[in-house]
Image (cartoon, rainbow, N blue to C red; front, side):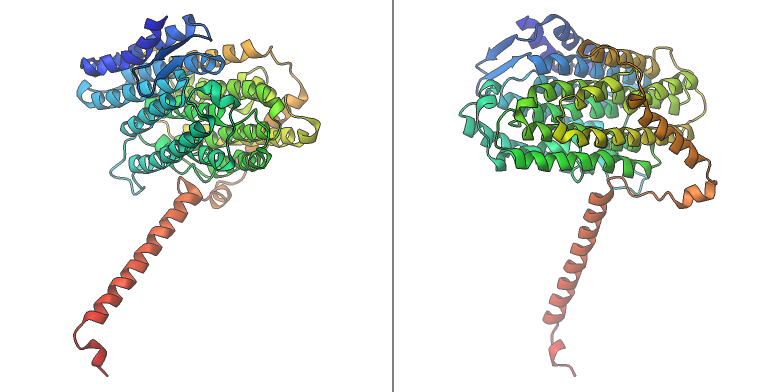
Length: 511
Protein backbone atom coordinates (compact mmCIF):
# COMPACT_ATOMS: atom_id res chain seq x y z
CA UNK A 1 0.00 0.00 0.00
CA UNK A 2 2.82 2.39 0.84
CA UNK A 3 4.42 1.69 -2.52
CA UNK A 4 1.17 2.40 -4.36
CA UNK A 5 0.65 5.60 -2.41
CA UNK A 6 4.18 6.75 -3.22
CA UNK A 7 3.81 5.79 -6.88
CA UNK A 8 0.68 7.95 -7.10
CA UNK A 9 2.85 11.02 -6.58
CA UNK A 10 6.03 9.90 -8.30
CA UNK A 11 4.55 8.48 -11.53
CA UNK A 12 4.07 11.91 -13.19
CA UNK A 13 7.54 13.01 -12.05
CA UNK A 14 9.17 9.82 -13.36
CA UNK A 15 7.57 10.41 -16.77
CA UNK A 16 8.95 13.94 -16.77
CA UNK A 17 12.48 12.98 -15.69
CA UNK A 18 12.66 10.13 -18.19
CA UNK A 19 11.48 12.32 -21.06
CA UNK A 20 8.46 10.08 -21.66
CA UNK A 21 6.12 13.02 -21.09
CA UNK A 22 6.57 13.74 -24.80
CA UNK A 23 4.63 10.57 -25.63
CA UNK A 24 0.99 11.00 -26.53
CA UNK A 25 -0.42 8.72 -23.80
CA UNK A 26 1.81 9.86 -20.94
CA UNK A 27 -0.84 12.02 -19.23
CA UNK A 28 -3.56 9.35 -18.78
CA UNK A 29 -0.95 6.72 -17.82
CA UNK A 30 0.34 8.99 -15.04
CA UNK A 31 -3.13 9.01 -13.45
CA UNK A 32 -3.44 5.19 -13.27
CA UNK A 33 -1.65 4.81 -9.87
CA UNK A 34 -3.99 7.43 -8.39
CA UNK A 35 -7.01 5.51 -9.63
CA UNK A 36 -5.63 2.30 -8.13
CA UNK A 37 -4.91 4.06 -4.84
CA UNK A 38 -8.47 5.34 -4.69
CA UNK A 39 -9.83 1.85 -5.33
CA UNK A 40 -7.52 -0.27 -3.14
CA UNK A 41 -6.32 1.77 -0.17
CA UNK A 42 -8.76 2.16 2.76
CA UNK A 43 -9.82 5.54 4.08
CA UNK A 44 -7.68 5.48 7.23
CA UNK A 45 -4.24 4.66 5.86
CA UNK A 46 -1.49 7.21 6.69
CA UNK A 47 2.27 7.06 6.19
CA UNK A 48 4.92 9.40 7.63
CA UNK A 49 7.84 10.76 5.60
CA UNK A 50 10.14 12.24 8.23
CA UNK A 51 12.78 13.21 5.64
CA UNK A 52 10.40 15.45 3.65
CA UNK A 53 10.22 19.10 4.76
CA UNK A 54 9.25 19.24 8.44
CA UNK A 55 7.99 15.69 8.36
CA UNK A 56 5.24 14.97 5.87
CA UNK A 57 2.18 12.80 6.38
CA UNK A 58 0.39 11.27 3.42
CA UNK A 59 -2.71 9.13 3.38
CA UNK A 60 -6.44 8.90 2.99
CA UNK A 61 -9.28 9.93 5.26
CA UNK A 62 -13.02 10.51 4.81
CA UNK A 63 -12.48 13.63 2.70
CA UNK A 64 -9.68 12.35 0.47
CA UNK A 65 -11.54 9.07 -0.02
CA UNK A 66 -14.06 11.10 -2.06
CA UNK A 67 -11.79 13.71 -3.58
CA UNK A 68 -8.97 11.40 -4.73
CA UNK A 69 -11.03 9.26 -7.15
CA UNK A 70 -12.83 12.36 -8.48
CA UNK A 71 -9.53 14.17 -9.09
CA UNK A 72 -7.86 11.10 -10.59
CA UNK A 73 -10.78 10.56 -12.97
CA UNK A 74 -10.63 14.17 -14.12
CA UNK A 75 -6.87 14.08 -14.74
CA UNK A 76 -7.16 10.75 -16.57
CA UNK A 77 -10.14 11.91 -18.66
CA UNK A 78 -8.55 15.23 -19.57
CA UNK A 79 -5.31 13.42 -20.41
CA UNK A 80 -7.15 11.04 -22.73
CA UNK A 81 -8.94 13.91 -24.44
CA UNK A 82 -5.66 15.74 -24.96
CA UNK A 83 -4.05 12.59 -26.36
CA UNK A 84 -6.81 12.31 -28.98
CA UNK A 85 -6.93 16.01 -29.79
CA UNK A 86 -3.26 17.04 -29.63
CA UNK A 87 -1.28 17.80 -32.73
CA UNK A 88 2.39 17.02 -33.30
CA UNK A 89 4.38 15.73 -30.27
CA UNK A 90 6.70 18.75 -30.40
CA UNK A 91 3.77 21.17 -30.03
CA UNK A 92 1.98 19.15 -27.33
CA UNK A 93 5.05 18.32 -25.21
CA UNK A 94 5.16 21.62 -23.23
CA UNK A 95 1.48 21.28 -22.37
CA UNK A 96 2.00 17.70 -21.13
CA UNK A 97 5.00 18.77 -19.03
CA UNK A 98 2.99 21.39 -17.12
CA UNK A 99 -0.04 19.10 -17.06
CA UNK A 100 1.94 16.39 -15.25
CA UNK A 101 3.48 18.88 -12.82
CA UNK A 102 0.06 20.31 -11.97
CA UNK A 103 -1.28 16.78 -11.55
CA UNK A 104 1.50 15.98 -9.09
CA UNK A 105 0.70 19.04 -6.99
CA UNK A 106 -3.03 18.36 -7.02
CA UNK A 107 -2.69 14.72 -5.97
CA UNK A 108 -0.18 15.72 -3.28
CA UNK A 109 -2.56 18.20 -1.65
CA UNK A 110 -5.43 15.70 -1.81
CA UNK A 111 -3.35 13.06 0.00
CA UNK A 112 -1.68 15.53 2.40
CA UNK A 113 -2.37 15.06 6.10
CA UNK A 114 -0.44 18.09 7.37
CA UNK A 115 -0.29 21.81 6.62
CA UNK A 116 3.14 22.03 4.96
CA UNK A 117 2.57 19.12 2.60
CA UNK A 118 -0.78 20.58 1.58
CA UNK A 119 0.77 23.96 0.86
CA UNK A 120 3.64 22.48 -1.16
CA UNK A 121 1.16 20.56 -3.32
CA UNK A 122 -1.08 23.60 -3.62
CA UNK A 123 1.83 25.79 -4.77
CA UNK A 124 3.15 23.21 -7.26
CA UNK A 125 -0.32 22.86 -8.74
CA UNK A 126 -1.04 26.59 -8.92
CA UNK A 127 2.28 27.67 -10.43
CA UNK A 128 2.51 24.74 -12.86
CA UNK A 129 -1.00 25.41 -14.16
CA UNK A 130 0.39 28.67 -15.61
CA UNK A 131 1.71 26.51 -18.46
CA UNK A 132 -1.82 25.27 -19.26
CA UNK A 133 -3.10 28.76 -20.07
CA UNK A 134 -2.38 30.00 -23.58
CA UNK A 135 -2.89 33.60 -24.64
CA UNK A 136 -4.28 34.55 -28.00
CA UNK A 137 -1.89 37.02 -29.67
CA UNK A 138 -4.55 38.39 -32.01
CA UNK A 139 -6.97 39.17 -29.19
CA UNK A 140 -7.31 42.61 -27.63
CA UNK A 141 -8.10 41.00 -24.26
CA UNK A 142 -5.55 41.13 -21.43
CA UNK A 143 -3.16 38.13 -21.33
CA UNK A 144 -5.00 35.29 -19.60
CA UNK A 145 -1.78 33.60 -18.43
CA UNK A 146 -0.38 36.64 -16.64
CA UNK A 147 -3.81 37.44 -15.18
CA UNK A 148 -4.00 33.92 -13.79
CA UNK A 149 -0.46 34.08 -12.40
CA UNK A 150 -1.01 37.40 -10.58
CA UNK A 151 -4.15 36.15 -8.86
CA UNK A 152 -2.53 32.80 -8.05
CA UNK A 153 0.52 34.36 -6.40
CA UNK A 154 -1.70 36.71 -4.39
CA UNK A 155 -3.83 33.78 -3.24
CA UNK A 156 -0.86 31.67 -2.25
CA UNK A 157 0.69 34.51 -0.22
CA UNK A 158 -2.58 35.02 1.64
CA UNK A 159 -2.96 31.28 2.19
CA UNK A 160 0.61 30.89 3.41
CA UNK A 161 0.10 33.69 5.95
CA UNK A 162 -3.09 32.09 7.18
CA UNK A 163 -1.58 28.61 7.43
CA UNK A 164 1.47 29.84 9.35
CA UNK A 165 -0.78 31.63 11.81
CA UNK A 166 -3.06 28.59 12.09
CA UNK A 167 -0.18 26.18 12.73
CA UNK A 168 1.35 28.55 15.29
CA UNK A 169 -1.90 28.79 17.25
CA UNK A 170 -2.46 25.02 17.12
CA UNK A 171 1.15 24.21 18.00
CA UNK A 172 1.33 21.55 15.27
CA UNK A 173 0.96 21.10 11.52
CA UNK A 174 -1.11 17.90 11.60
CA UNK A 175 -4.75 18.03 10.53
CA UNK A 176 -5.90 16.16 13.64
CA UNK A 177 -4.43 18.88 15.87
CA UNK A 178 -5.88 21.71 13.76
CA UNK A 179 -9.37 20.26 14.19
CA UNK A 180 -9.30 20.80 17.96
CA UNK A 181 -7.21 23.99 18.00
CA UNK A 182 -8.47 27.56 18.10
CA UNK A 183 -8.11 30.03 15.22
CA UNK A 184 -8.60 33.77 15.56
CA UNK A 185 -10.67 35.90 13.20
CA UNK A 186 -7.72 37.35 11.29
CA UNK A 187 -6.43 33.86 10.51
CA UNK A 188 -9.85 32.74 9.27
CA UNK A 189 -10.15 35.81 7.03
CA UNK A 190 -6.70 35.17 5.55
CA UNK A 191 -7.70 31.59 4.75
CA UNK A 192 -10.98 32.74 3.23
CA UNK A 193 -9.23 35.31 1.03
CA UNK A 194 -6.47 32.96 -0.13
CA UNK A 195 -8.70 29.99 -0.87
CA UNK A 196 -11.58 32.20 -2.03
CA UNK A 197 -9.47 33.19 -5.03
CA UNK A 198 -9.13 29.54 -6.02
CA UNK A 199 -12.85 28.76 -5.78
CA UNK A 200 -13.87 32.05 -7.41
CA UNK A 201 -15.85 33.87 -4.72
CA UNK A 202 -17.32 37.11 -6.16
CA UNK A 203 -14.72 39.86 -6.22
CA UNK A 204 -11.92 37.27 -6.19
CA UNK A 205 -13.01 35.51 -9.36
CA UNK A 206 -11.64 37.82 -12.09
CA UNK A 207 -9.00 35.30 -13.21
CA UNK A 208 -11.50 32.49 -13.77
CA UNK A 209 -13.33 33.50 -17.00
CA UNK A 210 -10.08 34.46 -18.76
CA UNK A 211 -8.39 31.22 -17.72
CA UNK A 212 -11.28 28.92 -18.65
CA UNK A 213 -11.70 30.58 -22.04
CA UNK A 214 -7.99 30.38 -22.95
CA UNK A 215 -6.00 27.31 -23.83
CA UNK A 216 -7.12 23.78 -24.52
CA UNK A 217 -10.20 21.96 -23.28
CA UNK A 218 -8.13 19.48 -21.27
CA UNK A 219 -6.62 22.31 -19.25
CA UNK A 220 -9.99 23.99 -18.67
CA UNK A 221 -11.48 20.66 -17.55
CA UNK A 222 -8.95 20.16 -14.76
CA UNK A 223 -9.11 23.85 -13.82
CA UNK A 224 -12.88 23.66 -13.37
CA UNK A 225 -12.91 20.37 -11.47
CA UNK A 226 -9.73 19.18 -9.79
CA UNK A 227 -8.09 22.56 -9.17
CA UNK A 228 -11.19 24.43 -8.04
CA UNK A 229 -11.95 21.55 -5.67
CA UNK A 230 -8.45 22.01 -4.24
CA UNK A 231 -9.57 25.36 -2.86
CA UNK A 232 -12.67 23.74 -1.39
CA UNK A 233 -10.55 21.00 0.19
CA UNK A 234 -8.47 23.71 1.85
CA UNK A 235 -11.58 25.38 3.27
CA UNK A 236 -12.87 22.07 4.60
CA UNK A 237 -9.47 21.29 6.10
CA UNK A 238 -8.57 24.61 7.69
CA UNK A 239 -11.73 26.54 8.56
CA UNK A 240 -12.77 26.03 12.22
CA UNK A 241 -16.09 24.53 11.14
CA UNK A 242 -16.63 22.55 14.37
CA UNK A 243 -15.43 25.23 16.76
CA UNK A 244 -17.77 27.81 18.36
CA UNK A 245 -17.01 31.50 18.35
CA UNK A 246 -16.93 32.26 14.62
CA UNK A 247 -20.57 33.18 13.99
CA UNK A 248 -19.70 36.67 12.69
CA UNK A 249 -17.31 35.33 10.08
CA UNK A 250 -19.89 32.66 9.27
CA UNK A 251 -22.54 35.30 8.61
CA UNK A 252 -20.12 37.15 6.35
CA UNK A 253 -19.32 33.99 4.37
CA UNK A 254 -23.00 33.04 4.20
CA UNK A 255 -23.95 36.42 2.73
CA UNK A 256 -20.91 36.39 0.43
CA UNK A 257 -21.77 32.93 -0.87
CA UNK A 258 -25.47 33.64 -1.45
CA UNK A 259 -24.53 36.82 -3.30
CA UNK A 260 -22.13 34.84 -5.48
CA UNK A 261 -24.77 32.23 -6.31
CA UNK A 262 -26.70 34.91 -8.23
CA UNK A 263 -23.76 37.12 -9.16
CA UNK A 264 -22.22 34.33 -11.26
CA UNK A 265 -25.50 33.70 -13.06
CA UNK A 266 -26.14 37.41 -13.75
CA UNK A 267 -22.80 38.04 -15.44
CA UNK A 268 -22.76 34.60 -17.04
CA UNK A 269 -26.03 35.33 -18.84
CA UNK A 270 -24.37 38.36 -20.45
CA UNK A 271 -21.48 36.34 -21.93
CA UNK A 272 -21.36 34.85 -25.43
CA UNK A 273 -18.31 32.58 -25.06
CA UNK A 274 -19.36 29.07 -23.88
CA UNK A 275 -16.30 28.55 -21.69
CA UNK A 276 -16.77 31.93 -20.03
CA UNK A 277 -20.37 30.98 -19.27
CA UNK A 278 -19.13 27.78 -17.63
CA UNK A 279 -16.66 29.84 -15.59
CA UNK A 280 -19.46 32.00 -14.21
CA UNK A 281 -21.42 28.82 -13.52
CA UNK A 282 -18.49 27.72 -11.35
CA UNK A 283 -18.61 31.06 -9.52
CA UNK A 284 -22.29 30.43 -8.76
CA UNK A 285 -21.94 26.77 -7.76
CA UNK A 286 -18.84 27.22 -5.60
CA UNK A 287 -20.41 30.24 -3.92
CA UNK A 288 -23.40 28.10 -2.95
CA UNK A 289 -21.04 25.66 -1.25
CA UNK A 290 -19.21 28.54 0.43
CA UNK A 291 -22.54 29.79 1.80
CA UNK A 292 -23.10 26.43 3.48
CA UNK A 293 -19.60 26.60 4.96
CA UNK A 294 -20.66 29.92 6.45
CA UNK A 295 -23.71 28.21 7.92
CA UNK A 296 -21.41 25.58 9.45
CA UNK A 297 -19.42 28.35 11.16
CA UNK A 298 -22.68 29.70 12.58
CA UNK A 299 -23.95 26.27 13.72
CA UNK A 300 -20.84 24.16 14.49
CA UNK A 301 -22.86 21.20 15.77
CA UNK A 302 -24.25 20.73 12.24
CA UNK A 303 -20.81 20.86 10.62
CA UNK A 304 -20.34 17.07 10.07
CA UNK A 305 -23.56 16.82 8.02
CA UNK A 306 -22.68 19.98 6.09
CA UNK A 307 -19.16 18.74 5.34
CA UNK A 308 -20.54 15.44 3.98
CA UNK A 309 -23.08 17.29 1.81
CA UNK A 310 -20.49 19.72 0.43
CA UNK A 311 -18.14 16.83 -0.37
CA UNK A 312 -20.79 15.10 -2.47
CA UNK A 313 -21.70 18.41 -4.11
CA UNK A 314 -18.04 19.08 -4.97
CA UNK A 315 -17.57 15.63 -6.53
CA UNK A 316 -20.75 16.04 -8.58
CA UNK A 317 -19.82 19.53 -9.73
CA UNK A 318 -16.19 18.69 -10.56
CA UNK A 319 -16.97 15.64 -12.67
CA UNK A 320 -19.92 17.29 -14.43
CA UNK A 321 -18.09 20.55 -15.19
CA UNK A 322 -14.99 18.74 -16.48
CA UNK A 323 -17.18 16.60 -18.73
CA UNK A 324 -18.91 19.72 -20.07
CA UNK A 325 -15.61 21.20 -21.24
CA UNK A 326 -14.57 17.99 -23.00
CA UNK A 327 -17.93 17.40 -24.71
CA UNK A 328 -18.18 21.08 -25.70
CA UNK A 329 -14.78 20.88 -27.34
CA UNK A 330 -15.94 17.90 -29.40
CA UNK A 331 -19.10 19.71 -30.46
CA UNK A 332 -17.25 22.92 -31.31
CA UNK A 333 -14.91 20.98 -33.57
CA UNK A 334 -17.87 19.27 -35.25
CA UNK A 335 -16.90 15.81 -34.03
CA UNK A 336 -19.97 13.58 -33.49
CA UNK A 337 -22.16 16.67 -32.95
CA UNK A 338 -25.41 14.85 -32.10
CA UNK A 339 -23.82 12.67 -29.44
CA UNK A 340 -21.81 15.56 -28.04
CA UNK A 341 -24.80 17.89 -27.85
CA UNK A 342 -26.99 15.22 -26.23
CA UNK A 343 -24.32 14.79 -23.54
CA UNK A 344 -24.14 18.56 -23.09
CA UNK A 345 -27.91 18.66 -22.51
CA UNK A 346 -27.73 15.86 -19.92
CA UNK A 347 -24.81 17.49 -18.12
CA UNK A 348 -26.59 20.84 -18.11
CA UNK A 349 -29.64 19.22 -16.53
CA UNK A 350 -27.38 17.65 -13.91
CA UNK A 351 -25.89 21.00 -12.94
CA UNK A 352 -29.36 22.51 -12.79
CA UNK A 353 -30.45 19.81 -10.33
CA UNK A 354 -33.02 18.03 -12.48
CA UNK A 355 -34.73 15.06 -10.76
CA UNK A 356 -33.03 11.65 -10.88
CA UNK A 357 -29.61 13.24 -11.39
CA UNK A 358 -26.58 13.62 -9.15
CA UNK A 359 -27.31 17.34 -9.10
CA UNK A 360 -30.69 16.70 -7.46
CA UNK A 361 -29.02 14.53 -4.83
CA UNK A 362 -26.28 17.07 -4.14
CA UNK A 363 -28.73 19.95 -3.79
CA UNK A 364 -31.02 17.89 -1.56
CA UNK A 365 -28.13 16.93 0.70
CA UNK A 366 -26.85 20.48 1.00
CA UNK A 367 -30.25 21.75 2.17
CA UNK A 368 -30.93 18.87 4.60
CA UNK A 369 -28.96 20.24 7.61
CA UNK A 370 -30.78 23.61 7.55
CA UNK A 371 -32.67 24.34 10.76
CA UNK A 372 -36.09 26.04 10.90
CA UNK A 373 -34.43 29.34 11.72
CA UNK A 374 -32.40 29.16 8.51
CA UNK A 375 -35.01 27.53 6.28
CA UNK A 376 -34.94 30.68 4.14
CA UNK A 377 -31.49 29.64 2.91
CA UNK A 378 -33.10 26.60 1.28
CA UNK A 379 -35.59 28.88 -0.52
CA UNK A 380 -32.77 31.09 -1.77
CA UNK A 381 -30.89 28.03 -3.05
CA UNK A 382 -34.06 26.87 -4.85
CA UNK A 383 -34.19 30.15 -6.74
CA UNK A 384 -30.46 29.75 -7.40
CA UNK A 385 -31.32 26.42 -9.08
CA UNK A 386 -33.72 28.27 -11.37
CA UNK A 387 -31.01 30.79 -12.17
CA UNK A 388 -28.53 27.97 -12.87
CA UNK A 389 -30.97 26.38 -15.32
CA UNK A 390 -31.26 29.71 -17.16
CA UNK A 391 -27.48 29.95 -17.29
CA UNK A 392 -27.14 26.44 -18.70
CA UNK A 393 -29.76 27.26 -21.35
CA UNK A 394 -27.63 30.27 -22.28
CA UNK A 395 -24.63 27.97 -22.47
CA UNK A 396 -26.39 25.54 -24.82
CA UNK A 397 -27.46 28.32 -27.17
CA UNK A 398 -23.92 29.71 -27.17
CA UNK A 399 -22.54 26.24 -27.92
CA UNK A 400 -24.87 25.87 -30.89
CA UNK A 401 -23.55 29.12 -32.30
CA UNK A 402 -19.90 28.05 -31.94
CA UNK A 403 -20.00 24.83 -33.95
CA UNK A 404 -17.51 24.39 -36.76
CA UNK A 405 -17.61 22.18 -39.85
CA UNK A 406 -17.99 18.50 -39.01
CA UNK A 407 -14.71 16.59 -38.67
CA UNK A 408 -14.05 12.87 -38.14
CA UNK A 409 -13.31 11.75 -34.59
CA UNK A 410 -12.84 8.44 -32.78
CA UNK A 411 -15.85 7.10 -30.89
CA UNK A 412 -13.96 7.28 -27.60
CA UNK A 413 -13.26 10.99 -27.90
CA UNK A 414 -14.20 13.80 -25.53
CA UNK A 415 -17.82 12.69 -25.74
CA UNK A 416 -16.87 9.19 -24.63
CA UNK A 417 -14.85 10.51 -21.70
CA UNK A 418 -17.75 12.78 -20.77
CA UNK A 419 -20.08 9.78 -20.63
CA UNK A 420 -17.74 8.03 -18.19
CA UNK A 421 -17.51 11.12 -15.98
CA UNK A 422 -21.29 11.55 -16.11
CA UNK A 423 -21.87 7.97 -14.95
CA UNK A 424 -19.25 8.28 -12.21
CA UNK A 425 -20.88 11.46 -10.89
CA UNK A 426 -24.20 9.63 -10.57
CA UNK A 427 -22.68 6.58 -8.93
CA UNK A 428 -20.82 8.75 -6.42
CA UNK A 429 -23.99 10.59 -5.48
CA UNK A 430 -26.10 7.41 -5.24
CA UNK A 431 -23.68 5.83 -2.78
CA UNK A 432 -24.39 8.72 -0.39
CA UNK A 433 -28.11 9.16 -0.93
CA UNK A 434 -30.90 6.95 -2.38
CA UNK A 435 -32.49 7.66 -5.74
CA UNK A 436 -34.57 10.84 -5.29
CA UNK A 437 -38.29 10.70 -5.90
CA UNK A 438 -39.95 12.90 -8.51
CA UNK A 439 -41.83 15.75 -6.85
CA UNK A 440 -43.09 19.19 -7.83
CA UNK A 441 -40.85 20.72 -5.15
CA UNK A 442 -37.79 19.28 -6.89
CA UNK A 443 -38.76 19.97 -10.49
CA UNK A 444 -40.44 23.40 -10.44
CA UNK A 445 -37.17 25.42 -10.55
CA UNK A 446 -36.15 23.64 -13.75
CA UNK A 447 -39.60 24.02 -15.32
CA UNK A 448 -39.75 27.71 -14.41
CA UNK A 449 -36.33 28.38 -15.89
CA UNK A 450 -37.20 26.53 -19.11
CA UNK A 451 -40.38 28.59 -19.51
CA UNK A 452 -38.51 31.84 -18.91
CA UNK A 453 -35.72 30.83 -21.27
CA UNK A 454 -37.96 29.88 -24.15
CA UNK A 455 -40.17 32.94 -23.59
CA UNK A 456 -37.08 35.10 -23.95
CA UNK A 457 -36.11 33.30 -27.15
CA UNK A 458 -39.53 34.20 -28.61
CA UNK A 459 -38.62 37.88 -28.45
CA UNK A 460 -37.51 39.54 -31.72
CA UNK A 461 -33.81 39.16 -32.39
CA UNK A 462 -33.24 42.92 -32.33
CA UNK A 463 -34.85 43.21 -28.90
CA UNK A 464 -32.71 40.42 -27.51
CA UNK A 465 -29.55 42.05 -28.87
CA UNK A 466 -30.42 45.42 -27.36
CA UNK A 467 -31.05 43.86 -23.95
CA UNK A 468 -27.89 41.80 -23.92
CA UNK A 469 -24.73 43.85 -23.44
CA UNK A 470 -21.54 41.88 -22.94
CA UNK A 471 -19.29 43.06 -20.11
CA UNK A 472 -15.64 42.01 -20.21
CA UNK A 473 -14.80 38.64 -18.73
CA UNK A 474 -13.93 39.23 -15.12
CA UNK A 475 -16.64 41.96 -15.02
CA UNK A 476 -16.45 44.42 -12.12
CA UNK A 477 -12.92 43.58 -10.84
CA UNK A 478 -11.59 43.82 -14.40
CA UNK A 479 -13.31 47.16 -15.00
CA UNK A 480 -12.00 48.49 -11.69
CA UNK A 481 -8.46 47.36 -12.49
CA UNK A 482 -8.62 49.06 -15.89
CA UNK A 483 -9.86 52.28 -14.29
CA UNK A 484 -7.08 52.23 -11.70
CA UNK A 485 -4.46 51.63 -14.38
CA UNK A 486 -5.76 54.52 -16.43
CA UNK A 487 -5.98 56.69 -13.34
CA UNK A 488 -2.41 55.88 -12.32
CA UNK A 489 -1.26 56.68 -15.86
CA UNK A 490 -2.97 60.07 -15.71
CA UNK A 491 -1.39 60.88 -12.33
CA UNK A 492 2.06 59.80 -13.56
CA UNK A 493 1.71 61.85 -16.75
CA UNK A 494 0.60 64.92 -14.80
CA UNK A 495 3.49 64.65 -12.32
CA UNK A 496 6.02 64.15 -15.13
CA UNK A 497 4.82 67.19 -17.07
CA UNK A 498 4.78 69.28 -13.91
CA UNK A 499 8.37 68.27 -13.09
CA UNK A 500 9.52 69.14 -16.62
CA UNK A 501 7.77 72.50 -16.43
CA UNK A 502 9.48 73.37 -13.15
CA UNK A 503 12.97 72.42 -14.39
CA UNK A 504 12.72 74.17 -17.76
CA UNK A 505 15.21 77.13 -17.68
CA UNK A 506 13.64 80.56 -17.36
CA UNK A 507 10.11 79.23 -17.70
CA UNK A 508 8.93 80.70 -14.38
CA UNK A 509 10.34 84.14 -15.31
CA UNK A 510 8.17 84.56 -18.40
CA UNK A 511 5.29 86.98 -18.52
